[in-house]
Amino acid sequence: MTDNPERFDLLVVGGGKAGKTLAMDAARSGKSVAMVEREMIGGSCINVACIPTKALVSSARTLRSLRNAGELGVRVDAPHVTARSLLEHKNGVVEGMVAMNHKQFLASGMDLVIGRARFIAPGTVEVALSSGGTRTLSGTQTVINTGTRPFVPSIPGLADGGYLTSDSLLELERLPQRLVIIGGGTVGLEFAQMFATFGTNVTLVESGPRLLPREDEDIAQAVSDFLKRDGIRVLTGISVTEVRRNHTEVKVTLSDGTSLEADDVLVATGRAPATPDLDLAAAGVEVDGKGYVVTDERLATSAPGVWAAGDVAGSPQFTHVSLDDYRVLKENLAGGTRSTKDRLIPYTIFLTPELARVGLTEEQARAAGHDVRVARLPVAAIPRARTMRETDGLWKAVIDGRTGRILGVSLLGHEAGEALTTVQTAMLADMHYTALRDMIIAHPTMTEGLNLLFGAVQE
Image 1 (cartoon, rainbow, N blue to C red):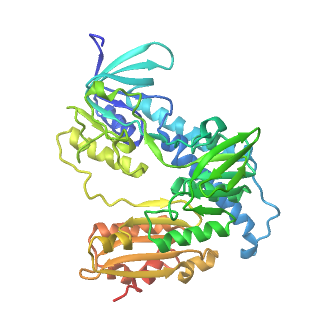
Image 2 (cartoon, one colour; image 1 turned 45 degrees about the horizontal axis):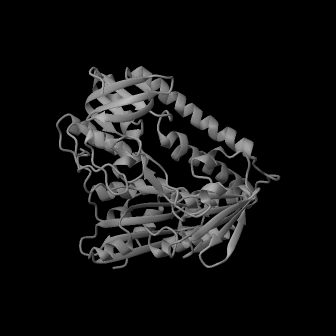
Image 3 (tube, rainbow, N blue to C red; image 1 turned 135 degrees about the vertical axis):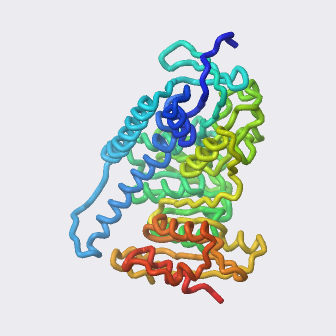
């Protein structure tokens, strides 16, 4: 360890949503701030996650809309995409947001350090600079926000046979004719439907008994039905036992003894914390058995003055949660007591139609002992859905029968993510479900469906 590290009021290791927002905020307030970023200016969301994938989801949705334009009385001849056109669109979106973030970083007054950091003492890192050489940085307060990376399971032949992850697939310079996706979670499903829309023959392999195990069975089944209707082959309760590549073709062997042939294999089996190279033991920072940084409800680690936020801290893996981690850290670094406990966290899976959820599922509510009342509404009953011919889906609400409070909703349908916030607001305000049942909502909008949904609550 150097005797004279460069000292800062705040040292941020990893520029994810929480870290970069906190660093800019602190620098603008006059504090000395250094933020170390390995390579992705703006964090994984902008570079390899939310933004590029949703840019391509938009492409897929546009292509789907053009193909279905005849239903709306519009003639469109042979719409199609190419790998190059998709890559140019995605790169344009990403590059614009990276440039904007870089400009904001420098304008804030922070010291942006590009390189690989490893801890050599509590609150102190040595950075191998991308430009060459090293710097040693120390923070009075230090925040770890290095995020996660795609998790790759130990499947015989997978490493040698070659595989894609959600990161590398975004750089693919050709559209595979046949794609096998290992994993039936959010990432696997979004890519499966996206590439099926682009014209790829997609097979989805999930070792669990069904897709989306966090969702109620009726919702997960509806999603599975939509994927199958889009031509996606969905295999559940089956695992991949071996992957072998023969020149340009990949053979995927399954646990039932059958096999699949594909051009590429996408591994979408979750993510792992980006901590192995940080040498957190030198910082006195405890990690759990999976490598996530252990924090308390204030996001403090086991090392005094060292905090963690976002995915690497085991927070739910959403950018909007990382942003709330920033709010927690900002208050607590100033001596506050803000907690991550009992946060009401919404999310949207950007399929077509979207699946948006907040609160408890029916299964979770019953397991927790609530007197459960359920309402279901086919999206086809919403007038706005009919005007757009976007009638696929099912809306579901879970109510506490004793109090009339909304425990959660699962909204599977067009623009469901936009309608979700209205329900979340009602839940935060602890409103009785009849408030949404009887609220005057503009007609015709998708949100108007909340009148109908909560009007169908079982008494």
